[in-house]
Image (tube, rainbow, N blue to C red; front, side, top):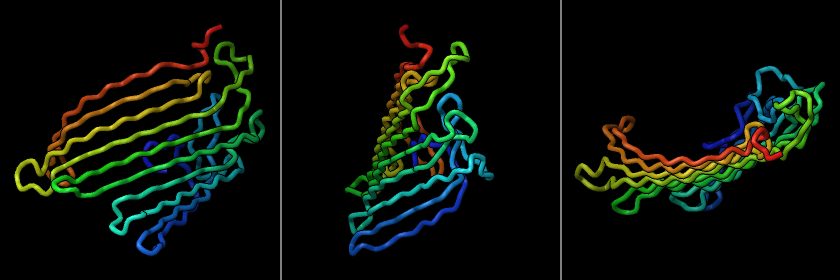
Length: 223
């Protein structure tokens, strides 16, 4: 699902390709995987080579490049399947994830402009978990998480002086995990960076980052 994904990795089979749509283009990516596992705290663990929970997840992404020069790509993706482990109180739990992404790369003289953005949504069925306070009490929460980022970089690649190798970039991210879970929080950050490219794969970089965050965890709830 790309950058800023919340879901961990998984194992399965995948089919991908592309199709022309007149002056536009489309690409696709579909996969059937062994499915991830729901942990006792509501987080998801990566799938394994063996099908531990006897479930399967379906993952798919569709992308469209609406311009003939392929400067812009818009994508939508999703993942659906059971994530509960047989024999547990949440064996029928299901996970659903969605993502929307954008990628724009174009030269507008004298700058090469590179813009990327993505918004992710992850939902897991409401189930009962064990309280971390006394390890006995059952409690639940809305297992809904969101993550997003947008970044932009500009570089005067058409100039013939040292500025040709200077790039200015900025990035904003946010990550919100379920309130009243033991890992609940709201986080955001902004990064501004200046780079000088020595070659296509190495650069000198200086950056500034601002971060804010607050806990919405279960143990911090008001009684």
